[in-house]
Amino acid sequence: MVASIKPYADELALGDGRMLIGGKWVTAVAGATWSHTHPATGEQVASFPLAGADDVDLAVRAARRAFDEGPWPRERAGERGRVLRAIADLVREHGDELLRLQALDNSVPLSFGEIYATSPAFVADVFDHHAGWTDKLAGETLPPYQGGDHMVLTLREPVGVVGAVIPWNAPLPLFAQKVAPALAAGCTIVLKPSEYATFAVLRLARLIAEESGLPEGVLNVVTGPGEPTGDALISHPMVDKLSFTGSRAVGRKVMTAAARDCKRVSLELGGKSPAVVFDDADVGTAAAVTMGTVTLGLSGQVCAAQTRALVHRDAMEEFLVAAQMIAGMVSYGNPFDPEVTSAPLINPRQLDRVLGLIGRGQEEGARLVFGGTREAGDLAAGNFVTPTLFADVSNDMSIAREEIFGPVLSVIPFGDEDEAVRLANDTEYGLAATVWTSDVRRAMRMTRAIRAGTVGINGYQLEPNSPFGGFRQSGMGREGSRAAIESYTELKTVLLPLTDEMM
Ligand code: NAD
Image: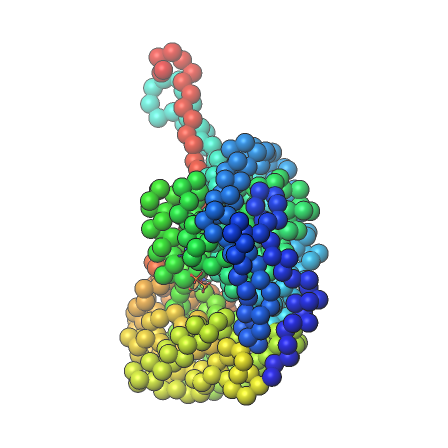
């Protein structure tokens, strides 16, 4: 048996059963709640409000009032920057607590939370990065195009009320990637976390609401599942912009909802990203990093995970041996145990889906090198799947086309650079890729040829100021960097005739 999660829930004083609307901590109007089941043990951890359409309406109206009448959209750049930096400090100060809450949410092991890209340090740095933009969000002065004396200016103004919806796998970084640029631009927000990862987000929202100096109603958090809570938020006519991170299937619904009122929309969706490994690369490192992303930490439940390893035929043997070694390091169990390396799948539905896709891989003729089963014995109460490696995969098989979101790597052989490019781009997605080679020219040729939002060369490490987002069905828009903050603004053009003839 995996040790019970309950003592940690008690220690962290979870579940006062409230969400944040208009500066107040409230239960749902109808009194409904959602009970969270821990993915490693199957225990009920605590419950939180299940917001219905009425609750979402209250939250959106609070954000609307804060935008139309409150100080935040009209605030001085210096003050906005100060508040964002205060949030960054709060995240640093409460980092351990937030990580422990996240382990209660989604069972991401504490050991993994110390890796920079998923750490509180990263979350804090995202707020600091966007704080730096507050006083640089400038318009332009354009030269007169034809005769007459006049001025044309542009202003960057906040887009308005933002409806943000985030998934469960990295709740704190994804909260930051939406809330930081929206606040920096002067927007007000209603955010819905995933029903599978609520506690860490609620705690961070409480720190922000009570200790950062952000005015009431600027940040609102409604809790509950996609339907009714998420649906009510994306459909609300008073929301100006939707910012969504999650699956492609729900992303399509968000885009459809946005179309009804011509809302602005940003989408960060899934991927089926390639790691392209040439025979002149450090093949052992390439295999370790690729298999590591698919099995350690979040167990492959990572949007940018490179789950298709395209491996040169001459490097195949070495790649498979090194990948197996990494899979041997996986240790499942209670996320608070420092020896545990990897998370379970988030829920039984996802467990069934992953096992179903593994079955399809075998039926369609891929070679199962190892894994492919549900963990039994002590781990039977959790949603654990053994680390899984498929070789001899062809790119038209289901395991090469569908985002599995589990500890499954599909290895596809290739013979030359042209074939590698064709295979890498033969996907509906385009989120990320890595190229592994010691030839710098080849690395750059491949980087230009691959249709993906982020390409790593001999490694993959995102920074808080790196633009991140997808080509094709992996989404639209970018998080991080100037592109992110500008996506929370409208561009206004000011026409000023300086003489009577121009009026
Ligand atoms: P999901 O799409 O099932 O859920 C995401 C969010 O949408 C949750 O808060 C959920 O409650 C909400 N939702 C569900 N149905 C809804 C509806 N009808 N209306 C409004 N909201 C609704 O995704 P998930 O399982 O939580 O997360 C995994 C997915 O997220 C994967 O596809 C992964 O690739 C993607 N992801 C992408 C990025 C990125 O930056 N590109 C980052 C992390 C995860």
